[in-house]
Image (tube, rainbow, N blue to C red; front, side, top):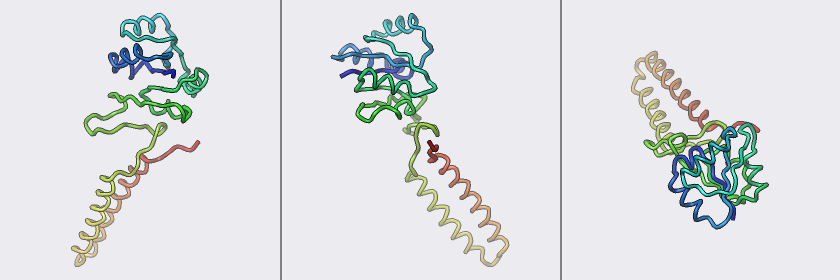
Length: 178
C-alpha cells in the first residue's frame, strides 16, 4: 500500500509525525509536491527531517497533476493540507486532510475553505441568527404600528440587513460551476 505525502503544510507542519510514519510504512513512500523543482534542496530538507521516501514527484500547480501522479504510481493513501488538491483524486484513494494554520481556524475550530475547494453548509448558528432576525422584524414592526412611517423605515433597514446576511451566507455556500 503506497503512500504520498505533501511537503509544505504537512511534513513541514508535523515533521515528527511524518518522519515516524515514513520510517514505519511498509511500502513505498512518495513525496508529492507543488514546489518548484529543486531536488537538492528538497532532498536535504527531507533528510534533515528524517523522512524516508522512494522519490520526490514535482506536480504542476495549474492542473490536477497530483491526482494523475497518484493514479500512475498506484498510491492508495494521500496526505495533503489543501482540500482543492484532494478533489480530483479517485475515490478509492484514502485522502487525509492535514490541518494547519493556513486551512484551519484554531479559535473557531473550523476548517477554512475557498470558493474553489469546498462549500460550507448552512450552520446551526446561521439558522438561529435568521430566526432571531425574523422574530425581531415581526416584533419591531408590530410595536411601532401607531407610527407607520417609523415602522416602515425600521422594517426596511432590517430587511436590508437580512438580505446582506443571506447574501453573505450564499457566497460562503456557493459552489463554482464546472
